[in-house]
Length: 467
Image (cartoon, rainbow, N blue to C red; front, side, top):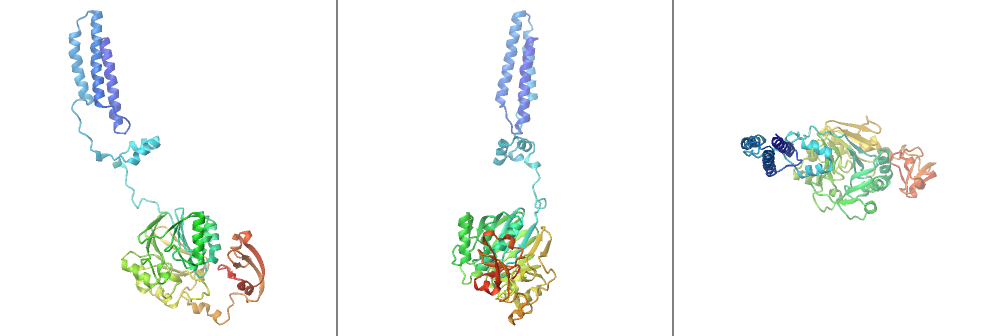
Protein backbone atom coordinates (compact mmCIF):
# COMPACT_ATOMS: atom_id res chain seq x y z
CA UNK A 1 0.00 0.00 0.00
CA UNK A 2 2.80 2.45 0.87
CA UNK A 3 4.42 2.43 -2.63
CA UNK A 4 1.05 3.13 -4.21
CA UNK A 5 0.51 6.04 -1.87
CA UNK A 6 3.97 7.42 -2.72
CA UNK A 7 3.28 6.93 -6.40
CA UNK A 8 -0.05 8.69 -6.14
CA UNK A 9 1.43 11.66 -4.29
CA UNK A 10 4.22 12.14 -6.84
CA UNK A 11 1.81 12.01 -9.75
CA UNK A 12 -0.60 14.33 -7.93
CA UNK A 13 2.23 16.85 -7.70
CA UNK A 14 2.86 16.41 -11.42
CA UNK A 15 -0.83 17.01 -12.15
CA UNK A 16 -0.89 20.16 -10.00
CA UNK A 17 2.22 21.55 -11.65
CA UNK A 18 0.99 20.75 -15.12
CA UNK A 19 -2.45 22.14 -14.34
CA UNK A 20 -0.90 25.42 -13.12
CA UNK A 21 1.20 25.49 -16.25
CA UNK A 22 -1.76 25.09 -18.62
CA UNK A 23 -3.96 27.67 -16.88
CA UNK A 24 -1.28 30.29 -16.33
CA UNK A 25 0.82 30.06 -19.47
CA UNK A 26 -1.82 31.75 -21.61
CA UNK A 27 -2.20 34.54 -19.09
CA UNK A 28 1.48 35.48 -19.16
CA UNK A 29 2.37 34.28 -15.68
CA UNK A 30 4.93 31.41 -15.76
CA UNK A 31 5.39 28.09 -17.56
CA UNK A 32 7.02 24.79 -16.60
CA UNK A 33 8.78 23.14 -19.60
CA UNK A 34 7.34 19.79 -20.64
CA UNK A 35 10.80 18.28 -20.18
CA UNK A 36 10.57 19.10 -16.48
CA UNK A 37 7.18 17.38 -16.26
CA UNK A 38 8.58 14.30 -17.98
CA UNK A 39 11.49 14.14 -15.55
CA UNK A 40 9.09 14.56 -12.63
CA UNK A 41 6.93 11.73 -13.90
CA UNK A 42 9.96 9.43 -14.42
CA UNK A 43 11.11 10.14 -10.89
CA UNK A 44 7.57 9.37 -9.75
CA UNK A 45 7.84 5.92 -11.33
CA UNK A 46 11.31 5.38 -9.87
CA UNK A 47 10.03 6.47 -6.45
CA UNK A 48 7.15 4.06 -6.67
CA UNK A 49 9.45 1.20 -7.74
CA UNK A 50 11.86 1.88 -4.89
CA UNK A 51 8.95 1.98 -2.50
CA UNK A 52 7.72 -1.37 -3.75
CA UNK A 53 11.20 -2.90 -3.45
CA UNK A 54 11.35 -1.65 0.11
CA UNK A 55 7.88 -3.04 0.74
CA UNK A 56 8.81 -6.39 -0.81
CA UNK A 57 12.01 -6.62 1.21
CA UNK A 58 10.18 -6.01 4.46
CA UNK A 59 7.12 -8.13 3.89
CA UNK A 60 8.57 -10.81 1.61
CA UNK A 61 5.31 -10.73 -0.27
CA UNK A 62 5.48 -11.52 -3.98
CA UNK A 63 3.14 -8.83 -5.36
CA UNK A 64 5.90 -6.87 -7.03
CA UNK A 65 5.51 -8.53 -10.44
CA UNK A 66 1.89 -7.39 -10.80
CA UNK A 67 2.47 -3.87 -9.49
CA UNK A 68 5.06 -2.81 -12.04
CA UNK A 69 2.95 -3.41 -15.17
CA UNK A 70 0.00 -1.76 -13.47
CA UNK A 71 2.07 1.33 -12.65
CA UNK A 72 3.39 1.56 -16.22
CA UNK A 73 -0.13 1.29 -17.71
CA UNK A 74 -1.44 3.93 -15.31
CA UNK A 75 1.52 6.21 -16.19
CA UNK A 76 0.80 6.00 -19.94
CA UNK A 77 -2.86 6.82 -19.32
CA UNK A 78 -1.86 9.77 -17.11
CA UNK A 79 0.52 11.11 -19.77
CA UNK A 80 -2.19 10.92 -22.42
CA UNK A 81 -4.77 12.63 -20.21
CA UNK A 82 -2.37 15.32 -19.06
CA UNK A 83 -1.28 16.21 -22.58
CA UNK A 84 2.26 14.90 -22.45
CA UNK A 85 1.55 12.40 -25.18
CA UNK A 86 0.79 13.61 -28.71
CA UNK A 87 1.82 17.26 -29.00
CA UNK A 88 -0.96 19.85 -29.41
CA UNK A 89 -0.89 22.28 -32.31
CA UNK A 90 0.66 25.64 -31.48
CA UNK A 91 -1.72 28.53 -30.98
CA UNK A 92 -1.18 31.09 -33.75
CA UNK A 93 0.63 34.21 -32.57
CA UNK A 94 -1.96 36.45 -34.16
CA UNK A 95 -4.74 35.44 -31.79
CA UNK A 96 -3.25 37.41 -28.90
CA UNK A 97 -1.14 40.50 -29.41
CA UNK A 98 1.19 41.39 -26.59
CA UNK A 99 2.90 44.70 -27.21
CA UNK A 100 5.99 46.06 -25.56
CA UNK A 101 3.83 48.66 -23.85
CA UNK A 102 1.63 45.94 -22.36
CA UNK A 103 4.69 44.20 -20.91
CA UNK A 104 5.76 47.36 -19.19
CA UNK A 105 2.29 47.76 -17.75
CA UNK A 106 2.51 44.29 -16.21
CA UNK A 107 5.58 45.22 -14.24
CA UNK A 108 4.24 48.60 -13.13
CA UNK A 109 0.75 47.77 -11.99
CA UNK A 110 -0.25 44.27 -10.99
CA UNK A 111 -3.93 45.10 -10.77
CA UNK A 112 -4.06 46.64 -14.23
CA UNK A 113 -1.97 43.78 -15.66
CA UNK A 114 -4.40 41.19 -14.29
CA UNK A 115 -7.22 42.82 -16.24
CA UNK A 116 -5.07 43.08 -19.36
CA UNK A 117 -3.96 39.45 -19.15
CA UNK A 118 -7.51 38.15 -18.82
CA UNK A 119 -8.70 39.92 -21.97
CA UNK A 120 -7.23 39.13 -25.36
CA UNK A 121 -6.65 41.89 -27.87
CA UNK A 122 -9.49 40.56 -30.00
CA UNK A 123 -11.94 41.16 -27.15
CA UNK A 124 -11.06 44.85 -26.73
CA UNK A 125 -13.33 46.98 -28.95
CA UNK A 126 -11.47 49.53 -31.05
CA UNK A 127 -12.12 53.15 -30.11
CA UNK A 128 -14.07 54.98 -32.77
CA UNK A 129 -14.33 58.69 -33.39
CA UNK A 130 -18.02 58.51 -32.55
CA UNK A 131 -17.24 57.03 -29.14
CA UNK A 132 -14.83 59.80 -28.22
CA UNK A 133 -16.06 62.56 -25.98
CA UNK A 134 -15.66 65.94 -27.67
CA UNK A 135 -14.77 68.76 -25.31
CA UNK A 136 -16.55 72.04 -26.09
CA UNK A 137 -14.46 74.69 -27.81
CA UNK A 138 -14.80 78.42 -27.17
CA UNK A 139 -13.40 81.16 -29.39
CA UNK A 140 -13.02 84.64 -27.91
CA UNK A 141 -12.47 87.50 -30.36
CA UNK A 142 -11.27 90.23 -28.01
CA UNK A 143 -12.06 93.90 -28.47
CA UNK A 144 -8.57 95.36 -28.77
CA UNK A 145 -9.52 98.25 -31.02
CA UNK A 146 -7.77 98.29 -34.37
CA UNK A 147 -6.00 94.94 -34.12
CA UNK A 148 -6.45 91.19 -33.72
CA UNK A 149 -6.53 89.07 -30.58
CA UNK A 150 -8.26 85.68 -30.60
CA UNK A 151 -8.27 83.18 -27.75
CA UNK A 152 -9.30 79.52 -28.04
CA UNK A 153 -9.98 77.14 -25.15
CA UNK A 154 -10.74 73.44 -25.49
CA UNK A 155 -10.30 70.50 -23.14
CA UNK A 156 -8.33 72.45 -20.55
CA UNK A 157 -5.90 73.82 -23.15
CA UNK A 158 -5.58 77.35 -24.53
CA UNK A 159 -4.30 78.96 -27.74
CA UNK A 160 -3.80 82.71 -28.21
CA UNK A 161 -3.64 84.04 -31.75
CA UNK A 162 -2.25 87.60 -31.82
CA UNK A 163 -2.63 90.14 -29.05
CA UNK A 164 -3.51 93.50 -30.56
CA UNK A 165 -1.17 96.48 -30.25
CA UNK A 166 1.22 97.15 -27.38
CA UNK A 167 -1.52 99.13 -25.65
CA UNK A 168 -3.70 95.99 -25.56
CA UNK A 169 -1.41 94.00 -23.28
CA UNK A 170 -3.60 94.98 -20.31
CA UNK A 171 -6.65 93.53 -22.06
CA UNK A 172 -4.82 90.28 -22.75
CA UNK A 173 -3.63 90.10 -19.15
CA UNK A 174 -7.08 90.88 -17.71
CA UNK A 175 -8.92 88.43 -19.99
CA UNK A 176 -6.63 85.52 -19.18
CA UNK A 177 -6.92 86.28 -15.49
CA UNK A 178 -10.71 86.61 -15.72
CA UNK A 179 -11.02 83.21 -17.41
CA UNK A 180 -8.61 81.56 -14.98
CA UNK A 181 -6.18 80.53 -17.71
CA UNK A 182 -2.72 79.80 -16.33
CA UNK A 183 -1.12 78.14 -19.35
CA UNK A 184 -0.97 79.01 -23.05
CA UNK A 185 -0.20 75.78 -24.88
CA UNK A 186 0.24 77.55 -28.21
CA UNK A 187 0.69 81.24 -28.98
CA UNK A 188 0.58 82.35 -32.61
CA UNK A 189 1.98 85.64 -33.83
CA UNK A 190 0.49 85.64 -37.32
CA UNK A 191 2.94 88.33 -38.47
CA UNK A 192 5.14 90.91 -36.73
CA UNK A 193 3.04 94.06 -37.24
CA UNK A 194 2.44 95.84 -33.95
CA UNK A 195 -1.37 95.73 -34.11
CA UNK A 196 -1.11 91.94 -33.91
CA UNK A 197 2.03 91.19 -31.92
CA UNK A 198 2.29 94.11 -29.51
CA UNK A 199 -0.11 92.93 -26.81
CA UNK A 200 1.07 89.31 -26.71
CA UNK A 201 3.60 90.17 -24.02
CA UNK A 202 0.77 90.64 -21.52
CA UNK A 203 0.16 86.86 -21.61
CA UNK A 204 3.63 86.04 -20.30
CA UNK A 205 2.96 87.77 -16.99
CA UNK A 206 -0.15 85.79 -16.10
CA UNK A 207 0.31 82.42 -17.86
CA UNK A 208 2.98 79.88 -18.67
CA UNK A 209 3.53 80.19 -22.43
CA UNK A 210 4.83 76.93 -23.90
CA UNK A 211 5.25 77.36 -27.65
CA UNK A 212 5.15 80.40 -29.93
CA UNK A 213 4.59 80.16 -33.69
CA UNK A 214 5.85 83.02 -35.84
CA UNK A 215 6.51 83.30 -39.59
CA UNK A 216 9.77 85.17 -38.89
CA UNK A 217 12.44 85.20 -36.21
CA UNK A 218 13.75 88.70 -36.91
CA UNK A 219 11.94 92.02 -37.23
CA UNK A 220 12.88 95.46 -35.97
CA UNK A 221 9.45 96.53 -34.72
CA UNK A 222 9.10 97.34 -31.01
CA UNK A 223 6.26 94.87 -30.41
CA UNK A 224 8.09 91.95 -32.01
CA UNK A 225 11.32 92.75 -30.19
CA UNK A 226 9.37 92.81 -26.94
CA UNK A 227 7.88 89.41 -27.81
CA UNK A 228 11.33 87.93 -28.50
CA UNK A 229 12.57 89.28 -25.18
CA UNK A 230 9.72 87.61 -23.28
CA UNK A 231 10.17 84.33 -25.14
CA UNK A 232 13.78 84.30 -23.99
CA UNK A 233 13.01 85.53 -20.47
CA UNK A 234 10.24 83.03 -19.75
CA UNK A 235 11.71 80.05 -21.61
CA UNK A 236 9.07 79.58 -24.32
CA UNK A 237 9.89 77.75 -27.53
CA UNK A 238 9.92 79.77 -30.78
CA UNK A 239 8.91 77.80 -33.89
CA UNK A 240 8.51 78.81 -37.54
CA UNK A 241 5.76 76.40 -38.65
CA UNK A 242 5.51 74.88 -42.11
CA UNK A 243 2.42 74.30 -44.20
CA UNK A 244 0.81 71.08 -43.02
CA UNK A 245 2.06 71.31 -39.44
CA UNK A 246 -0.60 70.49 -36.85
CA UNK A 247 -1.20 71.05 -33.16
CA UNK A 248 -3.74 69.21 -31.00
CA UNK A 249 -5.77 71.52 -28.77
CA UNK A 250 -8.05 69.39 -26.62
CA UNK A 251 -10.57 67.84 -29.00
CA UNK A 252 -9.59 70.26 -31.78
CA UNK A 253 -6.79 70.16 -34.34
CA UNK A 254 -4.96 73.25 -35.59
CA UNK A 255 -3.48 72.96 -39.09
CA UNK A 256 -1.20 75.43 -40.84
CA UNK A 257 -2.33 76.42 -44.35
CA UNK A 258 -0.01 79.38 -44.91
CA UNK A 259 2.14 81.27 -45.57
CA UNK A 260 3.23 79.56 -48.76
CA UNK A 261 6.04 81.93 -49.71
CA UNK A 262 9.18 82.35 -47.61
CA UNK A 263 9.53 86.01 -48.50
CA UNK A 264 6.97 88.64 -49.46
CA UNK A 265 7.30 92.35 -50.09
CA UNK A 266 4.11 92.83 -48.07
CA UNK A 267 4.50 91.31 -44.60
CA UNK A 268 0.73 90.82 -44.49
CA UNK A 269 1.18 88.02 -47.02
CA UNK A 270 3.48 86.19 -44.62
CA UNK A 271 0.60 85.83 -42.20
CA UNK A 272 0.23 82.41 -40.58
CA UNK A 273 -3.14 81.04 -41.72
CA UNK A 274 -4.62 78.26 -39.60
CA UNK A 275 -7.70 76.08 -39.85
CA UNK A 276 -9.08 74.67 -36.60
CA UNK A 277 -11.30 71.59 -36.88
CA UNK A 278 -13.56 70.62 -33.99
CA UNK A 279 -15.83 67.70 -34.70
CA UNK A 280 -17.95 68.69 -37.67
CA UNK A 281 -17.10 72.39 -37.26
CA UNK A 282 -14.16 74.40 -38.58
CA UNK A 283 -12.67 77.85 -37.99
CA UNK A 284 -10.37 79.75 -40.35
CA UNK A 285 -8.02 82.53 -39.21
CA UNK A 286 -6.14 84.45 -41.88
CA UNK A 287 -4.26 87.18 -40.02
CA UNK A 288 -3.78 90.09 -42.41
CA UNK A 289 -3.45 87.91 -45.51
CA UNK A 290 -4.38 89.74 -48.69
CA UNK A 291 -5.90 88.33 -51.88
CA UNK A 292 -2.37 87.36 -52.93
CA UNK A 293 -1.82 84.86 -50.10
CA UNK A 294 -5.42 83.70 -50.35
CA UNK A 295 -4.81 82.78 -54.01
CA UNK A 296 -1.64 80.90 -53.11
CA UNK A 297 -3.52 78.82 -50.53
CA UNK A 298 -6.36 78.08 -52.96
CA UNK A 299 -3.78 76.95 -55.55
CA UNK A 300 -2.61 74.24 -53.13
CA UNK A 301 -6.05 72.65 -53.26
CA UNK A 302 -6.28 72.26 -49.49
CA UNK A 303 -9.59 72.22 -47.65
CA UNK A 304 -10.38 75.77 -46.50
CA UNK A 305 -14.07 75.28 -45.73
CA UNK A 306 -15.05 76.76 -42.40
CA UNK A 307 -18.18 77.60 -40.47
CA UNK A 308 -16.44 80.63 -38.95
CA UNK A 309 -14.05 82.97 -40.78
CA UNK A 310 -12.03 85.63 -39.01
CA UNK A 311 -11.94 88.25 -41.76
CA UNK A 312 -8.51 89.02 -43.14
CA UNK A 313 -6.94 92.43 -42.45
CA UNK A 314 -9.81 93.77 -40.31
CA UNK A 315 -12.27 93.82 -43.21
CA UNK A 316 -10.02 95.41 -45.82
CA UNK A 317 -11.15 95.48 -49.42
CA UNK A 318 -7.82 93.81 -50.27
CA UNK A 319 -8.72 90.63 -48.37
CA UNK A 320 -11.59 88.11 -48.39
CA UNK A 321 -11.83 87.89 -52.16
CA UNK A 322 -14.91 86.48 -53.87
CA UNK A 323 -12.96 83.36 -54.89
CA UNK A 324 -11.72 82.81 -51.35
CA UNK A 325 -15.16 83.30 -49.80
CA UNK A 326 -16.65 80.87 -52.34
CA UNK A 327 -14.12 78.23 -51.27
CA UNK A 328 -14.47 78.85 -47.53
CA UNK A 329 -18.31 79.02 -47.54
CA UNK A 330 -18.51 80.64 -44.10
CA UNK A 331 -21.74 80.90 -42.15
CA UNK A 332 -20.23 83.44 -39.74
CA UNK A 333 -17.66 86.14 -40.47
CA UNK A 334 -16.00 88.17 -37.71
CA UNK A 335 -14.22 91.46 -38.36
CA UNK A 336 -11.86 92.69 -35.64
CA UNK A 337 -11.53 96.44 -36.04
CA UNK A 338 -11.57 99.60 -33.98
CA UNK A 339 -14.11 102.40 -33.88
CA UNK A 340 -12.86 105.54 -35.62
CA UNK A 341 -9.88 103.65 -37.02
CA UNK A 342 -7.71 105.50 -39.52
CA UNK A 343 -8.16 102.93 -42.30
CA UNK A 344 -11.92 102.93 -42.78
CA UNK A 345 -12.26 99.26 -41.76
CA UNK A 346 -14.42 97.42 -42.49
CA UNK A 347 -14.50 98.74 -46.04
CA UNK A 348 -17.61 98.95 -48.21
CA UNK A 349 -16.35 96.38 -50.75
CA UNK A 350 -15.75 93.84 -47.98
CA UNK A 351 -19.21 94.42 -46.50
CA UNK A 352 -20.83 93.92 -49.90
CA UNK A 353 -19.01 90.63 -50.48
CA UNK A 354 -20.05 89.25 -47.10
CA UNK A 355 -23.63 90.33 -47.64
CA UNK A 356 -23.63 88.64 -51.07
CA UNK A 357 -22.80 85.20 -49.65
CA UNK A 358 -25.47 85.49 -46.95
CA UNK A 359 -23.12 85.06 -43.99
CA UNK A 360 -23.76 86.58 -40.57
CA UNK A 361 -21.31 89.36 -39.75
CA UNK A 362 -20.03 90.24 -36.28
CA UNK A 363 -17.82 93.26 -35.52
CA UNK A 364 -15.79 94.10 -32.46
CA UNK A 365 -16.12 97.87 -33.05
CA UNK A 366 -19.90 97.55 -32.63
CA UNK A 367 -20.34 94.50 -30.41
CA UNK A 368 -17.22 94.34 -28.24
CA UNK A 369 -15.86 90.92 -27.33
CA UNK A 370 -17.40 88.16 -29.43
CA UNK A 371 -17.63 84.58 -28.16
CA UNK A 372 -18.23 81.56 -30.40
CA UNK A 373 -19.06 78.21 -28.76
CA UNK A 374 -18.81 74.87 -30.58
CA UNK A 375 -19.91 71.46 -29.30
CA UNK A 376 -18.53 69.71 -32.36
CA UNK A 377 -21.89 69.75 -34.13
CA UNK A 378 -23.51 73.14 -33.58
CA UNK A 379 -22.20 76.68 -33.16
CA UNK A 380 -23.63 79.65 -31.28
CA UNK A 381 -22.39 83.23 -30.88
CA UNK A 382 -22.60 85.67 -27.98
CA UNK A 383 -21.57 89.32 -27.97
CA UNK A 384 -20.49 91.62 -25.17
CA UNK A 385 -22.98 94.27 -26.33
CA UNK A 386 -25.37 95.20 -29.15
CA UNK A 387 -26.32 91.65 -30.24
CA UNK A 388 -28.83 93.04 -32.75
CA UNK A 389 -26.55 95.73 -34.20
CA UNK A 390 -26.68 96.36 -37.94
CA UNK A 391 -23.18 95.13 -38.66
CA UNK A 392 -23.42 95.98 -42.35
CA UNK A 393 -23.41 99.71 -41.67
CA UNK A 394 -20.51 101.34 -43.47
CA UNK A 395 -17.68 103.16 -41.78
CA UNK A 396 -18.94 106.45 -43.18
CA UNK A 397 -22.45 105.88 -41.83
CA UNK A 398 -21.12 105.15 -38.37
CA UNK A 399 -18.18 107.45 -37.95
CA UNK A 400 -18.61 110.32 -40.39
CA UNK A 401 -19.59 112.59 -37.46
CA UNK A 402 -16.00 112.60 -36.31
CA UNK A 403 -14.83 113.67 -39.73
CA UNK A 404 -17.15 116.69 -39.58
CA UNK A 405 -16.18 117.60 -36.02
CA UNK A 406 -19.51 116.53 -34.53
CA UNK A 407 -18.16 113.63 -32.52
CA UNK A 408 -20.05 113.26 -29.22
CA UNK A 409 -18.41 109.90 -28.45
CA UNK A 410 -15.55 111.51 -26.52
CA UNK A 411 -15.44 114.58 -24.25
CA UNK A 412 -13.90 117.75 -25.56
CA UNK A 413 -10.13 117.51 -25.75
CA UNK A 414 -9.73 120.39 -23.28
CA UNK A 415 -12.41 119.27 -20.81
CA UNK A 416 -10.95 118.66 -17.34
CA UNK A 417 -11.88 115.37 -15.67
CA UNK A 418 -10.51 112.37 -13.75
CA UNK A 419 -8.62 109.54 -15.45
CA UNK A 420 -6.67 106.47 -14.30
CA UNK A 421 -3.32 105.88 -15.98
CA UNK A 422 -1.30 102.76 -16.57
CA UNK A 423 2.22 104.14 -16.62
CA UNK A 424 3.64 100.91 -18.07
CA UNK A 425 1.32 100.48 -21.06
CA UNK A 426 0.87 104.26 -21.43
CA UNK A 427 -2.90 103.87 -21.56
CA UNK A 428 -5.55 105.98 -19.79
CA UNK A 429 -8.94 104.81 -18.54
CA UNK A 430 -12.13 106.20 -17.09
CA UNK A 431 -12.29 105.54 -13.32
CA UNK A 432 -15.17 103.06 -13.71
CA UNK A 433 -13.49 101.02 -16.48
CA UNK A 434 -13.56 97.29 -15.70
CA UNK A 435 -9.85 96.99 -16.45
CA UNK A 436 -8.77 99.57 -13.87
CA UNK A 437 -8.91 96.93 -11.14
CA UNK A 438 -6.48 94.75 -13.11
CA UNK A 439 -3.73 97.38 -13.29
CA UNK A 440 -0.72 96.60 -11.12
CA UNK A 441 -0.63 99.09 -8.25
CA UNK A 442 2.91 100.07 -9.04
CA UNK A 443 1.82 101.16 -12.52
CA UNK A 444 -1.49 102.78 -11.55
CA UNK A 445 -1.73 106.56 -11.29
CA UNK A 446 -4.68 108.92 -10.94
CA UNK A 447 -4.78 111.96 -13.18
CA UNK A 448 -6.96 115.06 -13.19
CA UNK A 449 -6.70 117.08 -16.36
CA UNK A 450 -7.64 117.10 -20.01
CA UNK A 451 -7.64 114.39 -22.61
CA UNK A 452 -5.45 116.60 -24.76
CA UNK A 453 -2.79 116.66 -22.03
CA UNK A 454 -2.66 112.89 -21.91
CA UNK A 455 -2.49 112.51 -25.67
CA UNK A 456 0.37 115.01 -25.83
CA UNK A 457 2.25 112.94 -23.22
CA UNK A 458 2.03 109.83 -25.40
CA UNK A 459 -0.89 108.13 -23.61
CA UNK A 460 -3.58 106.38 -25.66
CA UNK A 461 -7.23 105.78 -24.67
CA UNK A 462 -8.40 102.38 -23.45
CA UNK A 463 -10.16 100.38 -26.16
CA UNK A 464 -12.86 99.28 -23.70
CA UNK A 465 -14.08 102.42 -21.93
CA UNK A 466 -12.97 104.72 -24.78
CA UNK A 467 -12.30 107.83 -22.60
